[in-house]
Image (cartoon, rainbow, N blue to C red; front, side, top):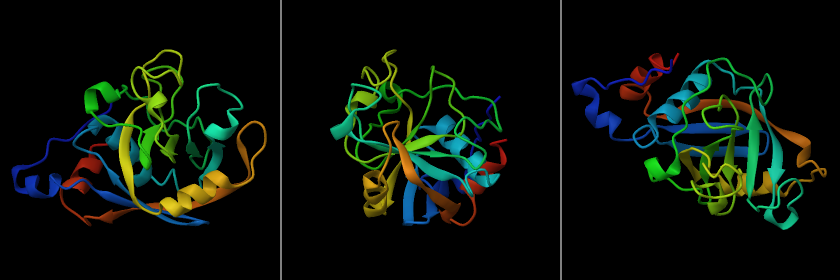
Length: 203
């Protein structure tokens, strides 16, 4: 079962500042805030995969563009990544879904969002929203069940890299002709304290 840490009193000040991660790719660097306060279960899941190194050597392998809705008639704009061992890789059990109707987070440009099939099925794969895609929020129809997807972070720098990846050549199955290597994902700040205490419980 996914554990979410309770922050020790002495670390409350650090806990109020969500962690920032650095995503180093072959096309450049992206930095993103991880919403540990608003989406703790999904954020914890991301951090434990990151801490275990499963994202290092993964790829951005898919581009979804609203101007060429190939596989789904409901338009969205995202790039999707897969862990080093594949898009459905599950080092840990699937997590409960944190719906946008509960977290208050939205699929605006720059949002990080967990990929999933059924509710409560998300494991390691996630996406970055390139342009506002409200069809991915709770009540939207990108997934026919209307439950949407779980947002757990937002890009704070590097959207030019995200847009370049989305615009790269792809086939009719939305697969990038040349997947973009994710060299490493690391904690950018803070370097210690509450975030690392949280990650120790994300196992």
